[in-house]
Amino acid sequence: MPSTKTLIAATAAIQAIKASPSLAPRLYLPGDAVYTAEQATYWSTRSGEVQPAATVVPQTAEEAAEAVALLLSSSTPFAIKSGGHSPTPRTNTTRGILLSLSALSNTTYDPATTHAHLGPGARWGSVYAALQPHNRTAIGARYSEVGVGGFLLGGGLSHLSGAHGLGSRSIVSLLVVTGRGSVTASASENAELFWALTNGGGNEFGIVTQFTVRTYPSTSVWGGMHVTLDIPAVLDALDEPSVDADADAAVMPSFVFGTGTGLPPDETMASLMLYHGTYRTPVPSQTALDSPAPAPPPSLAAFAAAVPLHSTLRQTTHGDLAAELAAGNNCVHRHAFVTGSQAWRYGAAMRLYEAAMGVLRGGNAEALFCVAFTLQLVDVGGKDETAWWWLLSVEYVDAEEDATVQRLCQDVVEVLRNMEGSREFLFRNDAGDGQDVLAGCDAATRVRFQAVKSVWDPEGRWAACTGTGSR
Image (cartoon, rainbow, N blue to C red; front, side, top):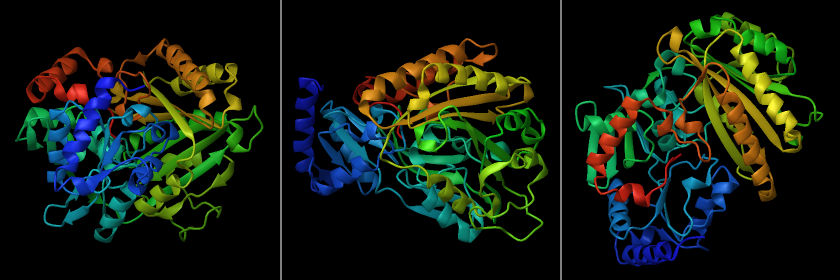
């Protein structure tokens, strides 16, 4: 329940916003159509059921800055929403103010620099569509409905990350609303703030109202979904060095079971997201779903060879692939995430899979709608630093299952954290309830983050008013 202090502050903030000629038309209260629509676009109903006292939808960076100034001056708790693709309720606010960036959604391309200017409320599907006529793409989300702001500020793992790094590393400059006002941040201007925001800083330092990012050539890509019951073949293929050696290839295997899969309760399937950015199939493109798969690139051949239940592997565009992957995601269920990381070792994928499944199956997780354990091989600088970033994602239906799901998530974290090779690092985009991303950083990085906070939020007002994890 919200505190009396929160209710008083929110009431004062609403009155101040109503008195502003520019912000009053952007204010929506419970029962208003825009308020309801903003709640409905949260990916997880756990977030959407949290009820803010009001929603503000600024149309410009200047309006966003004015709203922030009013909220900070009244010490009003507020949450920041870009795309709403978050499993955690902390990305909304109970009886505070929700600041939605959904109207800041423009994408423009500059052919002279090959940079793109992106609004934080844009969805990646619209970004890819805007860049495709220029035969360019960006390091963006694999699902078209994910918002730009949260993805980039959380790090941003992409199909293109093997070749070009995380999405945050493609950022050239930022326009940021901070507690001290609006500033530009880049490698040469407000450089420490830029460092923090491009190293997984989330919304802990300000609201980004525009991202300028590098783009990359892209005419067509090879990829799609490949679903199989041959778990041993997939786990064996994950140990092959060919994928890590091919920077243009990406594979994201999710091991999935649950009542929503249509499989017997004791059956697990591997849902493989395969991608290659430069491969061109030597046979005519196959674009229809369930059509025979074209010849795969050599680095992904072992995965494509697993006997499929369903396969959409084809030559297509980056945007079309992202739209396909988003088609199975909806905003009608509850979701929970937890994440961790494990140093790469031969056989580590098998050990992680067996340990996670042992916990989940022992906890009767098969009674839930959909449970997915995902492995992502990430090279963060040299073979000795290559690691598995793992994600447990649980989709379920009823609030009565919240406690069961949280217990399962914590049990998996506990078991995998105690395995040999476990690392402290936590990927912000995938962090779940109660996971402290900053605690997973090394001591020098933590000190540096705190130094940035001492400059940009010296009185702690921003930290006191905001949550973490704009997505």
